[in-house]
Length: 177
Image (cartoon, rainbow, N blue to C red; front, side, top):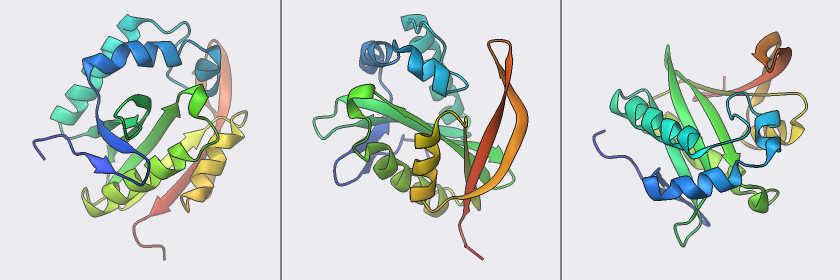
């Protein structure tokens, strides 16, 4: 796949991240809650963080190891992001965030359904999984809405800000046997 894919859903457009998205990304991710609820979003979030993220997203796509989609409204304004990253052995990790003004509207679930479908049908993955901190149950609800099932609680799996955290892992398989 040479060109970055574009996926359209009922309310959203999932497409490649652009430099022009970065000021919006920085604005959305200024709220400390994003750092608190995720393993890899720093606080405070600076333009340099967004530039690094864009650079890494492009490199991973270039190596055919991952897709970081901007989640956009139909006017093509970025409202969040969702990624699918190849972990080898025909499996991929799903990750996402969405700007606070867009919470609780079903946008992440809509985007994630499209990305999971893309992962199975276009990329040939057998398994797609996602993890979340127990103090972020809304993320776990999204995973359940995708048809993912709880696979494990990974004890003290992540260290952030000097503290160890358990994370819950959900997964879905191409063929649900």
